[in-house]
Structures are given as C-alpha cells and as structure tokens.
Length: 364
Image (cartoon, rainbow, N blue to C red; front, side, top):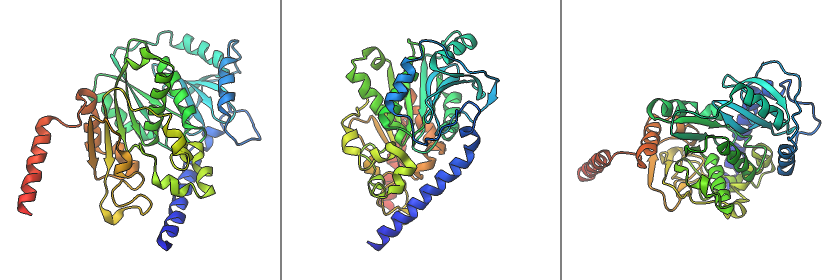
C-alpha cells in the first residue's frame, strides 16, 4: 500500500512536470495576437464550438498580418485541412484562424472568414496520392511527436500524410472525434483514409468511426483503409483510473484523461471496433522498469492487455516505452508495412522469427 501511495505521488509529479514544460514551450502560442483576452481559463463547451461553427455564415475577419505560430499545441484543434493549410479553433476563446504549412497565420475571425481566405490561397483540395494517412498524437502531446513517423511514411509509402492537431487536455474525446470528422470531410472525396494513432489518438479514431456508423455515413466508412494503433488504451487505462482519484489529474489531463480512467464505462459504449483491417503495437518493458500502476507487462503507461482489441489483424509487442513508440525504427517499419499489406511483417520474416524462437527454446 505504501509503495502504491508513493507511486501515485511520484507519477502525478511527473505529469505535472511534463505539463509545465509543455506550457513553457507553448507560452508564445497561447499569447498569439490572434488570441483575444479572456478572464476565463476554461475550455469552451461543445455547444459553444458548434454554435460558433454554425454562426459562420457571414465572414467576420480580423485585421491580419502573416504571423508566425507554433502550429497549435494544446490550445488549438484542427477543423479543416487542405494541402497542409489548416483552419484551427481555439480551445479557450472559440475563434478560428487559418495557418499555412509553415505555420504562418493568414486569417483569423470566424469560420467563414477563414474558409474564404483558404479558398483564396488554396482553391483546390486535390492531391495526387490515392490515400491519406492521418496521424493522431496522444494525450498532452502534439503533432510534433508524430513528425518522425510521418516523415518515414512519406518516404516509403505512396500517400498523403495529414497531421491532426487537437487540444487533447481541453475537451472531451467526443469533441475531438467531431473535429476529426470535419477534417476528414474536408479531404478530397475519392481518397482512401487510413489512421495511425498514438495512445488516446486511437480512442478518438474509434469514437469518430462509431459516429459515422451511428449517422449511417456509409460513404465515409467505405473509404476507410486501415488503422495502426500504437500503445492504445483500448480497454481503458488502469493508471488513469488510479490517478483519476487525485484532483490534480483532471486539472492536468482534462475531461479526455478522466474518460480513459474513471469515465471509461461511459465512454466505451461510444467506441467502435474499426470495420477495416487494424493492427496494434504494444510496448512490453522488462519487469525491473515496470510501473506499479500498470503492472509488469506494459510500456509504463498502457498494459499489454489494455492495448488488445478483438478483431485485430495483427498484434506486435516491442520493448519500448509508451512515449517513444512512434520514434522506434522497428515500429515505423512495421507501421509502413501494415499500411501496405495489413500485416506488421512479411510472412517470411515471421517464419524466421518463429524459427529463431524455436532455436532459443531448444538451447534452454
């Protein structure tokens, strides 16, 4: 019991430290000139987000100079994507902005104003590749964490890489899923859609798929190609259930973090099993560096069994920590292979691995 209490305090401190470091990196982002002053530090509600979107029939733009940004980290959620240009919504004020692939702000105001500017700068949403691969980061992370994997996919796969930024700690998973659906809707209609998610990003994908199923959006469902899940808490996260007992956890991770723990029972009924081929990569660290809140078999944040989901086309275990799964060369190669063949490794490599395992067993 004493060890458990120590672990709770220690890991909460670690989360707090990570959040403070991220806040320092994002200080210029949160103070951008396109962020109106506000006395409230609470995220706008889902209803406010929707009303702002629907109220955008008349373009209301603010005076603008191309202004450098950090691309949106924890304060911004993507709502449209076109050739690397993104329309984002601020999680605090609810206003919109248009940023270029170089993260320069070209417009801000309401949604209609940003859409008008987007149409002026990028008239067509078409791209050459037949498939779009959408990358989603995890809780308290940003698209920066997925860039290494994205570059590897871009080099090796004939596809268009799309990074989806969302304010993971400032809204519910349902809200993030709604934004993801908007981004998918903004892509060319004839393109296949694949997802590669890390941690909570996979839960956002599963929620979005369930929403498409609920609304009978068969046109979008038919476009789904495959899903690669890296360290997904597909059964909820025991670490979130334990840390959720502490008030500090909700302050740090918001509604989304709480849904992975204490709120999992309510969230799970809104999640779908992908109707397309999907593969799961789970981290399994040596027992001597395990987290008592997760158990001996896991990646320090998500347990191996918590990552499982019935119906997976393939399941891969790697000796890597949760936060760095997407940067591991083996994981990157396996992800690219799955996007091509719906398997993490070729049959020949799997046979060689089984043979090697047999040799080790015989020696033992």
